[in-house]
Structures are given as structure tokens and as C-alpha cells.
Amino acid sequence: MAKKKKLEVNPLSFLENNNLKPKTIYFNEREIQVKQYLPIESKIELIQLIINTSFIKNEETNLSQLNPCFKELLYNYFLVKFYTDLSLNNEYSNQYDLLKSSGLLDQIISVIPIEELELLNDLLIRSIKQEFYRIEQERSFNGIVNKLMNIIKDFDIEKMIEQLGNLQNSELIQEWMKQSKNVD
Image (cartoon, rainbow, N blue to C red):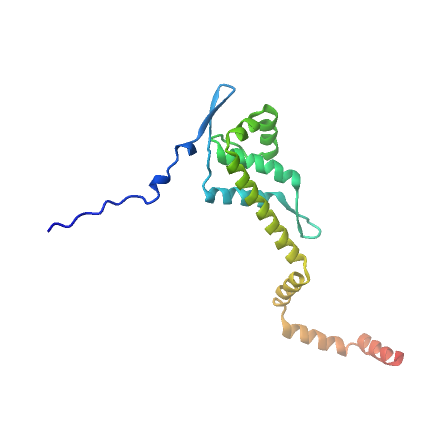
């Protein structure tokens, strides 16, 4: 009896959706392809780029802070970069201004499905909240203690003890210790 060969089929092939093919828009006589769906890996990358670029580190305090203007600008810039076939340079502000003032940004956004934009916004908001929580933990007592512990682990304890011993033998410390005993 001959053994039947199994036909291998992608188990999710029935999910293929023609509605997810890019839509074509026309702007200044140029054809632009706009994706209707962005794979989750690309969404994660897009969101991480926004987070990494819109949180600005204060040089004096070394703490990060969200710049809402950058967030808005970068959201729209990366939306166009990831969802279209347009080549954008890294001059975020200039590129955003050109896209917005020309009306092209609004035209692109209008053809991306609302569900796709809502999901992207939801993921971005959650990621920003997570980043705020991380920053809050960094600023908390435990965060400060952890930073101090990292600094202290780099100290040469033997050298520190030796220096403290030298300090105790110094005349200035001896004088100060005598005066502090007299105060009691």
C-alpha cells in the first residue's frame, strides 16, 4: 500500500487579507504607497525610536524628561517613514514642517486605517507610561541607593581604610576630637 504524501499548507493562509495591501495616493503628481498594516516588530521599533528620541536627558541633573513637542514631531515623522515609501532624511523638524505645511502628512494619515493608528497610539502611550515609571524608580530612594552601591563597588576599600587611618593620626583630627569631647 502506497503511503500518501501530506500536503503542507501554511495554517494561517486563510487569513490573508487583500485589504492590507498598500494604498496609493497621489501628491504633486507623485505616486506614494501607504501601508495599511505595519508588522508588530516594526511598530515596536517605531515606538522605541520615538521614546529614545523624545526623552531628553538634563545635563545638570542627568535625569530624563519627555519633550512633548519632540514626541508629536517624531510620532508623525516616523509614521510617514515607516508607513510610506518616501525617503526622509534625519532632519526631523524640517521634514515634519514640510510634510505638515504641504498637507501631505494629513493625506497620508487619512488613508491609514483608524484601528492601526489607535493601536499604535495605545502602544506608544503604554510605552511612555512605562518609561515614566522607570524614571520614577531611578529617582526613588532605592534607585539612588542602587546608584551609590554601583559607585561604592568601584572604591578600593583597603586604600580607603588606610587613608582614614592617616586621617585619625593627623593633628587636625586629634584637635577636633579633643574639642568635641569637651563640648559634651
